[in-house]
Image (cartoon, rainbow, N blue to C red):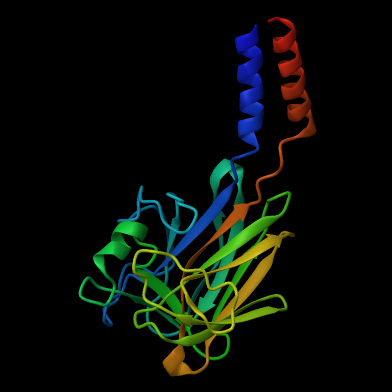
Length: 248
């Protein structure tokens, strides 16, 4: 009986520690001007990123969105499925895409650490060349949005806006370690975190200060906030301790 009680409570406590994740990787699939795969397809872990933990949360399941090359690209709405039954509808626009080759400034450590996530991006210039809308988000509580930033050159000045929150940053070439640029103020980094979001819809835009400083969007993650253990589970754990102590 003790084993059953302990197991049940362990499951109850463990269940609140697992956050739902919806993750998207924008894959230009083009290199030095050569067109890539058919535009605007959805491929779940189709490339080298399959099974490789990517991003700051170690997520291993990204949905690859193959974007159009050269000129105005975009697609949507497309339903993106996450873990634990989570989902959203994705719509985006951009001025183009790019994909880095093995001969570019991306180092081998970056490939090993992130799979496809840092290998390609959609891009935009001043002021809002990239717009991403997430609709029908089915999280019931708060959630965090991680936006992964990058391009094929680094050192470019750009900004990202979500609602009334606008932050500037400087792009950098991913070297195997993700650097947080959430503080804004033009600091260099690979991702921005918008935490404690609510609601069924979010829209964010990225843009460079000019065409030479165009921005690049690698992908994003929506992560459901892990709730505190329920009062029922905590009371059960307290009661279990009392029962076991009395049986000694």
